[in-house]
Image (cartoon, rainbow, N blue to C red; front, side, top):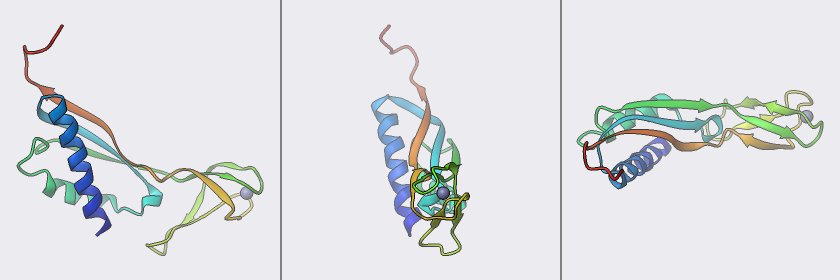
Length: 128
Ligand SMILES: [Zn+2]
């Protein structure tokens, strides 16, 4: 259950940030998931919805953004979006779309971050 441990870690990250900022409520969370993480966004969303119950995050809008795979090819110097074969759900094969080589440097697609957190704070208790 790859998704469960990731979802759990994300919820903890967000709650940690929310608590440090004296949030009374979390309104909005954006999570970036690179294609290469092989996480299933729908499954992740489902797990997050379950994990946030009875926390500050309950009721928050959770946005999951998928990040496509990008490469720098070491063979033909192509740089940009990559071809990816993920028919095998455990090992993605990344290829250069120009020359078909797998000798590439992956520059995007491994993200698994909490990107943005919008919180509600208690009013009237802030330093100017
Ligand atoms: Zn190439």
